[in-house]
Length: 263
Length: 240
Image 1 (cartoon, rainbow over the protein chains, first blue to last red):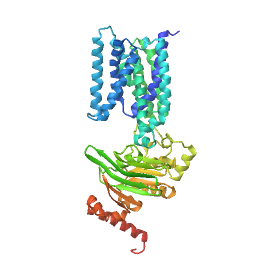
Image 2: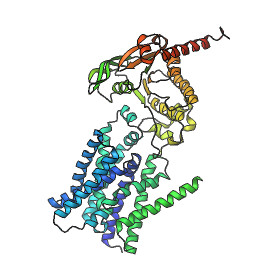
Image 3: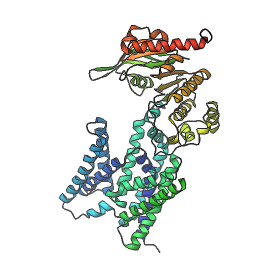
Image 4: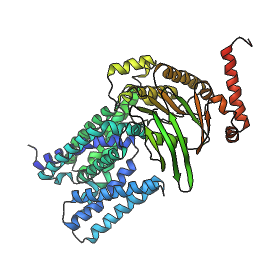
């Protein structure tokens, strides 16, 4: 019989892997890995805000990430610095400000659980919320999928076909922020981007259409959540990093197999 | 009339990107815009398509207008796995049968199952144009379509574009630097350098003093010689 905390962890992990699969493909296609990283680093500030105001840290994260993303997009459009430099400044400054703020709060906070995730402490109530968030994100992603793929291939073609690219882009960023806010608990701030990038990069090796890549990416994420949870209990290792190690192993296996097949 | 620009200007800082442009595109037009780099050619296309609202003047669109657009420098991101067929169908309301039919018509059916990241520049350009034709537009806007093509790719592309112009009832508006294309296919050339310097039939504008001052005597002579050569080929026998 599985302990209930393991079941909660499993469900929460599967939810995150499902949305991470589709969103991660766009992060790979649009070359937004560093953007995702900056966004997740800023979430520590959101956690600080949540603790300070006594509200749910997931909601705090969502609020701070939204403001951060809007600020980031604004600065990117200003083109004062190259994108790379801008993200480098913002990612690490927001992480540092977050850590400093949390220590200034003078409350006993286990920083490790935010940096590397704490999936085994997910409550049943949180699982319910994760499930609702997953349904919402999947539905929204389904609605914008074709438009977003076309925009990713060529923004001007999309505009010429009367797609409101600003609206679609904003919806996509909001979904990404929801993902980051929910994922903090699962693999932690420092590893969130890998839940987006590695499944998508693995799925790329075996896919011949955008949708196929999205679905495979989710499945790969789910498999590594299951394997990661199981191994972390078996070997008593931290769960978040163990999940990512499983992702990397899957990536190496599938990458090597697809290279062998092509030669 | 399909679309009309009335006295449009686009101003950035103190610089006029476009200045008092008047332009009308009718049914069955084949217009090429030429001009030096930074002349505002792409900006003019963007204003016409409504991506961009001009600072002065207005764009008038006919209710029947259905624009389709093929961008400059189209190089799809390699990490997106998508076949030519899926790309043509993406975000379009067309049946499989219609795509098959138009692919056979323009001889690209062998490309349909290939990934677009594996296509050559010329093949990609054809797929892009076929995609823009599937919903039967009446105006096709092309921004430097032959830029990434080698010489043989360019020649086959001109033939392809001429076939489209002759077989489908549509107008074409194109930005191009290509002498061959400009002189052999286009019915009208517009020479742009922030403002419209001159416009008219290809041969006529090569005599225009404004054209000569913008592109230089050599270029103007080259263009008219080119036309001259083509005329001889058409007459065929007189020098044979």
